[in-house]
Image (cartoon, rainbow, N blue to C red; front, side, top):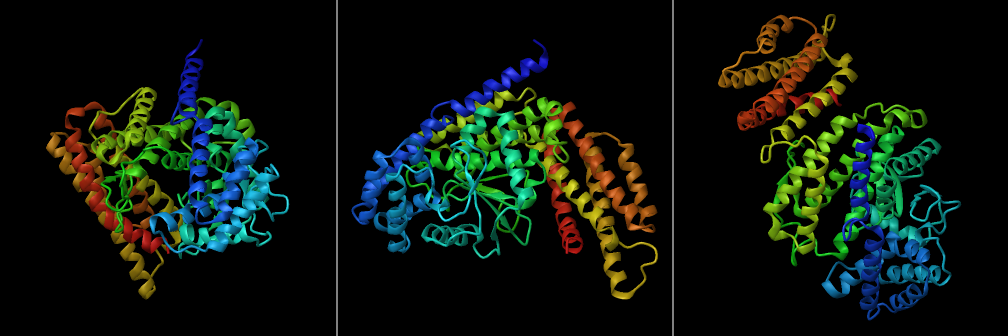
Length: 525
């Protein structure tokens, strides 16, 4: 057996664990616990909403496929959840007529042993991700505006749009085909994990937004994944995003049915764990509560497996699904492993916020990640995660500068305010490159090292200051790539000084923050 076959065999065993281990992998077990959970909730709700009692009786007598499709429906689950929250937990006011109406539709479908969910009623020829029972249906905006549709639009408006001007959309044929190809590819790469994850994705929604947004799930809309059209660029990315969001939906079902968090846990009072690979914003969006850390650690572990399988099988599959394009499976797997490992270790420091299942879940994820990682990072050192942010920001700058060269100052630009604005842009680029070379030079000085790259870069500053910004932009990207390459090599060859490198990268990122923000605002407009 050759090395590739050995690796495939090993990764298949990892996949089996992530897809089938009880209690955290096995979708059959998780679905069973989910149905018990909602049976219990229906029984409690029936004291206040008689329609819930009829749904409970119909559910007990329905076939497995009908239970799966009807009780998996987001508007049915939401009606039960919000109704019970109102009556038992003093939750927000609810529309009792709407809750009763949704449950009555669910009851009719269950009594008929129908495999058509309440939300997909009123849709002419609903499209699905595939032909199997676990393949969710794809939202179609042209439909009968019945009660389930009204309920879903309300959920979307409140929990996903929330004033951000997002819009539901019917995928055109290219987008629909890309979803189908992504699902098919995911099934070829990871048949067991694909089946296990996608069984929790009952509805797939493509939405449009006036700003970049990739994909999202929300616990208040169970079983539903929302995607922006641009993530469906090619089948490899479509497969990645489908897996990503389906895994979050799987975790939502786990969180509903297992002691993932301690009794009384509050997302608002939860300790926060910093995602070092994301730039901090004013709203602290890179500081995550414990429940989010749990789901993201699991998702990254599964994505690491996905990227490793892409690396091994791309050569045979590109003939069917096309080139990888912007997907680098080796780099993506490395980043996913690093992030999963970091988050799983951090969970140990906040174990008081976890329930018994949550502690076991974190250790299960950590064990699988450490088995997959043949070149683990030094424990407790996070410089590689900070360097990840620096490198991704370099990629963002490269894209930004290449798309807006016409806005950069060069020869022939001599008109008033426009020239002033463009010269200011060039000054920002110059300040960025000079600052980063200076900061990196200080690190090398402390390490007792010299670098021809840095010395040459410093000499370039004055020479480039009088030339076009195209040349300066190219140089700042070149220097940034050289800096990250040099620091990455240092972390591997000189681990005793990684703490110093870690501190340096933080200074580097802090210094570049203002420059990147100004360039993004000026060139991204």
